[in-house]
Image 1 (cartoon, helix red, strand yellow):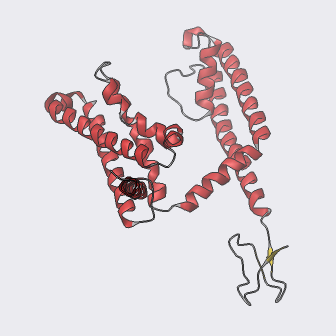
Image 2 (cartoon, helix red, strand yellow; image 1 turned 135 degrees about the horizontal axis):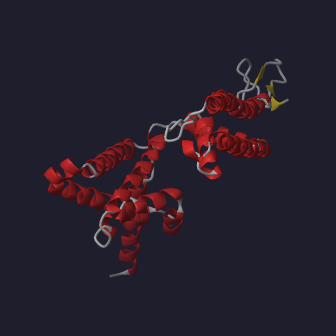
Length: 280
């Protein structure tokens, strides 16, 4: 084969990889969006199959069908993972990325189940892959909102740490107090178990596996329940205050020609006269 023929073959392979990459990793074309929608449907179907397999009567009655579906879905995801590796400009970077690891974990449990029975239950990790819906539906506003929340948590890091430490200290104090009031005869046989009850009550979860029996203990439980709602309000206030502070520091863009202003971050030209905007 001549050098020209080899070069032509390489160009064809390169173009083929680019086309595959546009479909499996892109979202700009209708084919890529259709591929992602079908993939999400297959992911949901595979997770439903795993959940049905965990129901004993259904598994006994339809074991062969569910087992066949499980391997069918696994083969589909194996082919898809291989295509993503093949078409990616940086295969190692993709394999080490969040989506790369999740894509791999979507196929490994079925193969591992050959050696370790029951490992296929880990296939529910496939639900994480539905995060691709953000790319399919172009939900950029939700992605931006998530980034804002992360920035708010980082900005309020010290406040949150102090708040959590105070909550743990409060839970230990209340747990020790209920331990003294109720005692082992009412199920509070140790301080750690009593602290567990205090945390469950403070967070308004209320499992009910342990409950105070004395009037004083019940009064303390009522106080903790009300206190739990107050703590939720404080937590929400911490986050919302940092989110509000971000909005309050937005950049104002001023038009030097007509004096019109806007805080829209994507605005580049004045909406009135078309003059390029300058930050104030």
